[in-house]
Length: 332
Image (cartoon, rainbow, N blue to C red):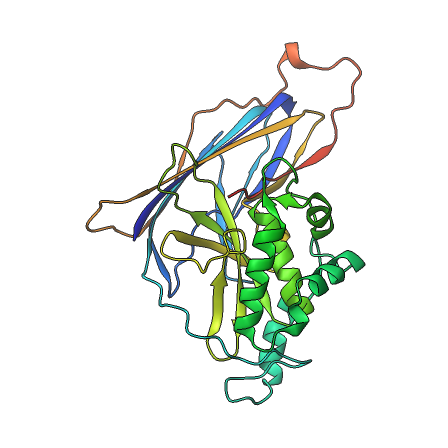
């Protein structure tokens, strides 16, 4: 499927801020399962944008705005071809013990173990706790004998036990918060699935991206999160715990990480006492283009900045130094 994705973000401040520094992970990857044909990033106020790759090969855009401003807008447009995904074969790998096995049943090499090590840890928002281990026991995951059985049991257990609901958690919520609330969004489902698999010693990673929804009038598209787990016989296999399915060509991958903290769509700081509001909208649609051409380009939106704080905005004896994080929760 050739998929057009439009992601608009607007940051507004209730008073002028002096500086903003932000990094973005919003460019879809090119890899075996998908090809990025076009990518366009428009930013206002105009400033220099740099681009690099992080330790997982995710594309990172970074920029700074060092004059006074009250608004930042970003418009990201991508065209991604998601190739038809093969059906997942029966996953009959035995569950790993302290060391992962390869497809022949032999213990994985030290190099392989090191490459997977980061994806076996309970860190960040994926918190080890009594409640987490109690949930692992209640879902009867210790009774599974193969990786395939584990994934099926996990998917059905999470789908029946937890409810998808917005505005119950936020971007900083942990697995403890999700268990307590009994509800959350895709980010929370991904984190709890990572926790359950890592307690079972299965390497797994967080995936951020987009999910195309056909009925967008009733269910608007948003950024999405799911996971991939490691099968010694088949490699990395994608699984969406929010919907209890293996992803298909409607899923476009942006970034991989140990958890959400590695791959938020946006992360940054600004200087000032202003309150920040973020509005984010995503639209996806199948593309009718016949000959997409791979393009990466940046352009600029005409939003004002000021070298000096306007006279009417200058505080009377108020210290405007400070900083705040800017991020958004993955919702779908």
